[in-house]
Image (cartoon, rainbow, N blue to C red; front, side, top):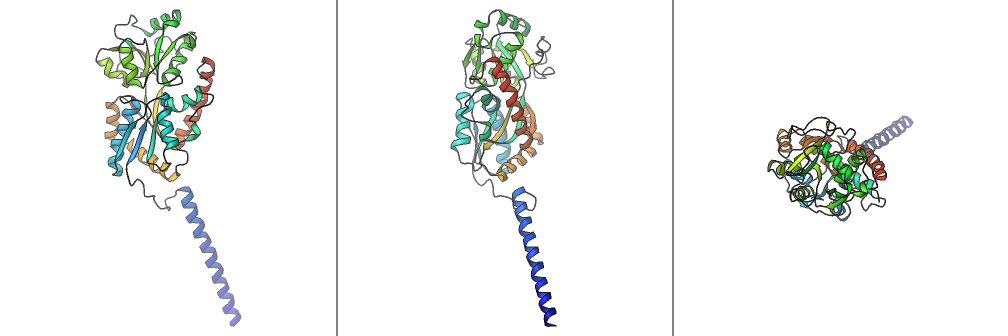
Length: 342
């Protein structure tokens, strides 16, 4: 009897140890993978800063304010938008990704200019793709080519012919030598057989500044999104020669596509999304991604995007990260071929 008792006690102890190990393993797995069994983090508990690395009034800025309006109500915490233009978006990116704490309370609202194009266009970039933890893509915009209203060209085809004959007379705006406009212009010039280096870039702080420079006659061309140009087009200060998309844009249905104007294969288009410093905890990234996913299905948010003439273009964190890698490789090739990469 005594031996039987001791054997039973030993078996009970072994079962207890095994169950304890399974429990610990399950708890650890939940914490690592973010399964439903894991405890939700207490975030956010205070004000969040959305950093826009471009001037006020452009697409990134307007999208950021739409996100701030939605999430401040969703999370019950104030969300402020801070504009830090300069350096083709890198001053703001440096502040948000390198100088701020990786705690989720400073978030970068980026686009091609401060990510894929910047790395593709610079052999020694200050901010790298690896410095970002990409949260989600939010919106996209159709590329458009704008000139002053009284400019002598009424078609993109005629304008392209003039540029081919007079490349040294073409002045155009960009937030930096490797910004969104630079890649769009470089790809277009390459397609018509013009040496990119023979044209002249004029620095701007963003789309609103670029459009104003065209309207004022300070530059010949500006390339940004349809929505960013809309206010000055509607005011009669500038005109669009073409849009870069598979179909005409519903905002300006009378403006032809670049393909209709005889220029096929132009692919540079604009997007905006969110990223955090590389060391930000995964749980915070997941919370942001989940919130953005919900936001992109909200009817009022969609209406807000339509109002600022942007299109919803949600990609989750994994999809966004993959698209960034692919786009960077594409733009590196273009940058090397056209001389953008320095």
